[in-house]
Length: 260
Image (cartoon, rainbow, N blue to C red; front, side, top):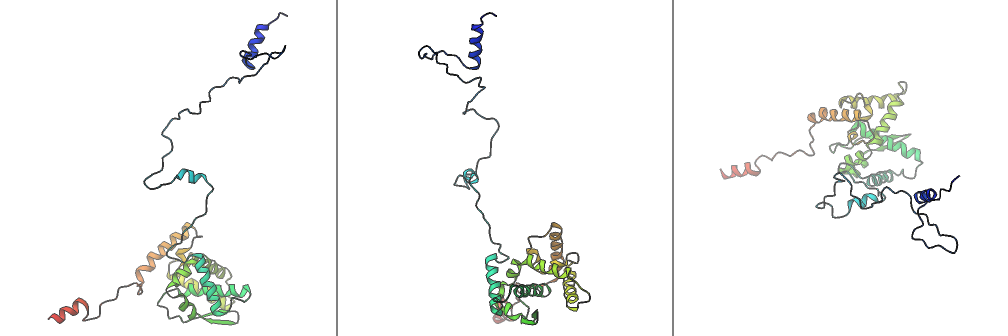
């Protein structure tokens, strides 16, 4: 075999790098391997295309991109047509205190809440209601008047905060229907009556007038609620928000009469 020193040197130069520029140490030459083939490492290379859309500095005076790179922070907002969850919880707790049931076992308190949700379903939360009615929990009965008085103009906002819970209560009542139980049959019949009046016979558990505040319903149920509003609202006069007519002889008409 012939000596291929030159070829060997070229192989070492290709894979291990050359020894040019390295001082030998003693009798052993220092071999410092250099990087192999590098296609390119230009960190300042320019990209192509238009790139991401920059933030509108007219509206955001901080680095939005940097903010999005940080761990997300929870956020929310209250909705004007219903009570905030904490406020609604405080109101319900106060209602429990009014009737003196806040220290009762949980099953009694839950039954009271169900009675309150059912009463709202069949009677609504109108400001024009006289407040007559009873809540029946086991062998006890409670006058609904103190609830109406305490909530006042916040009745609708309170019940809208519990819209999903009211729908769940109605669903349990409908599911537990027993034709041989007079109380069960009466409750189911009342719910279905209200549902039919609102055009919600397909979804009777959404018969309460705060059901449009539900957030855990399907798109089909939401569409039915929208159609129900179109059916019910034109035939209902909201006397609370309606403008009152002038008293005869007052205002501009009265002034014109006096001037004559």
